[in-house]
Image (tube, rainbow, N blue to C red; front, side, top):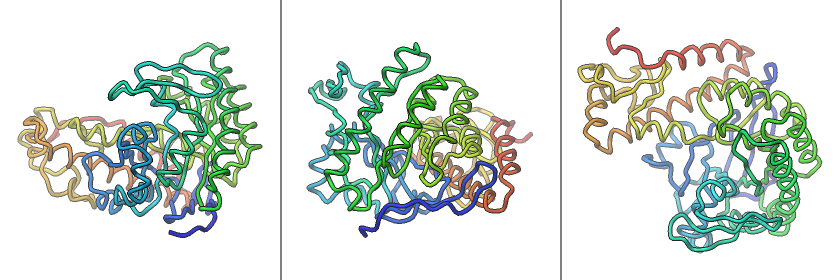
Length: 382
């Protein structure tokens, strides 16, 4: 680990699509990047070595879950999150705010922060901007998030504006705590989070205000929370041009391959989503041929692999018939193999995106991804 300053380098552009690198104390993150979600210090059903071999430069950890179990203080005593989960590459932690709002049993919001009861055992906790940054500092993550309030859409404009303004005040307090704990001196980065729901002028106001604060990067939050894709893309179209071109842009919680390529086309650099891992555990494979539901009986006699040209053994060396059997029998190996395949597909797609931007052919690559994703579960031998 070094203590060099956090930085972002823009290496190539193709329209609004950007190819770059984020430098952190634990290495380079090639962008556009997809971050596998390791909610509780593990990417479910995967070994850390597998995740890295697939091409991931960064994984995401969840502040809310880790503060409750095993606690940030325990992780710090055990050497920090990188050592604890055996991942010596970049880690991004979210602020915990979304989970507090969506998972906690009882919660009370105030200017100070949020008090809530754990969904695990009912114990009471308080999450403030300062405490969120303290937890992330104890975990030792390379990229950290301000605490914000994330509303589910649709919501009334008055409520969206209230939450956006509160998030801006919390952004200032998060930044102050980050600097107090020496985050910049340790080479870490703190991202501000743009809010504003689906209200265009509020999105712009949030982005403009955050751009005046000295964040190392900027996240776009409060999307992919129930609104149609066209609404999400319209919010990106008005938000990314307001954000500094010299800083990375992270669209939180997104998403499908179609969402990702459309968002890259609008200037987004970083993504995370539970979709590929969750889908794998439920029998759904993502491939360049579209989605394949291995629960479907049509695969019971199909000897073909998911993708014989894939670099991932999970996709290349196991038949669809075998995967179908594992999923129908409830065997854990089925979910492991499909998760492996799905993350391989995502990382292969991200490498394709980066290569296409450098070659000036991103529009063509985007069309190829969208065509494959739209095919769905085709007949096994058709």
